[in-house]
Amino acid sequence: MEINNFKKKFNSAINILVKFNEAGYEAYFVGGCVRDYLLNDDFSDIDITTNALPDEVKQIFKKSIDTGIQHGTVTILINGDSFEVTTFRTEDDYIDHRTPEKVEFVSDLKEDLDRRDFTINAMALDSKGKLYDYHCGEKDLRNKIIKTVNNPNERFFEDALRMLRAFRFSSKLGFEIEENTLKAIKNNAELIKYVSIERIVNEFRKLLTGKGNKRSLELLLDSKLNNYIPFLDKISKIIDFSNYTFCQSLYILSNINDISFEKLKELKLSNKEIKQVKIYEKINKDFISNVPLEIILYNYDIEDIAFIASYSKYCDKEDIEKIKLPIESFNDIAITSMEIISIIDKPAGPWIKEIIKKLEEDIILYKIDNTRKDILDFLMKIRDNK
Image (cartoon, rainbow, N blue to C red; front, side):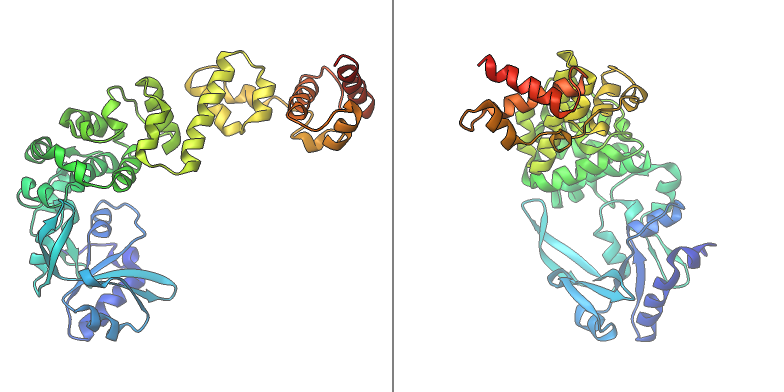
């Protein structure tokens, strides 16, 4: 079939396929870019499959990187853009339900497409825009169905991460998961334990951002796949997370499911992500404790405060934005920490932080002005009452 906007969407990348063809090889666009193209969605990554062996690919394209040459993958570099090129292959004898122990290069496009996960990802386009679809992927796109290539039990036994990817694509596209595919996930759910938590979190992160995330999460919980994943095994309540960041979603999931924030460590998140979720909890505790909004705004980022305020219905972002603080940090105060030590006339210690905190709060709440006179009066009272 000829696609009307093929040249516009793939642009100069078509020349790569043409160059393969001129050298006597087959080459096709494959995978996600074909899927998104048929859906008329934007895509940035363009993957290519070919019957040329890796060394032959490197002879045709002089600028390349051996990104996965043992599995037939070479990344070619053209005018500052990179394209992943993989030789037609079949995969046998998967190790620990994740990694193929043996990769065999083949010469037939259909054999290569047979090894792929879902029908909607197992289509290819040639240099003229002709679609090669041996597994009815285009039909499944029209019917909004996620379905494995061939036997779903075999696909998930080979690579257990595919089960979570089914929910991720369901979320991204707003598609349902085909009945036999979903049944196979339920039957093979325990195999997800063989997949590293880092890869699981990467898929879960993408799942949460999809337009169909709520429905996909419902299917995920129904499949019991989450029972074998740390943190996710504590989840029973969900909402639509499409308008939240990953850290915001984790905070909400922890909150509505009464999950300890210590459980987040089992997901092996970055220190930055763990810290961010804990900041949300601190802001929430400040609101509950009736800490003045001005003090909260001084201590935390406005976007973090706005998220908690909106989610917990404490106030609107407009209310927060109306507040103008007299200082943004201690550097704006008309005194230095060394001067404070000198005035209090006491050896340096933890007490300095306590005084600075009290000074900042009094200025923020307009109990004293940010002037040398008022600050000195403030400090001398503390000194005289010590």
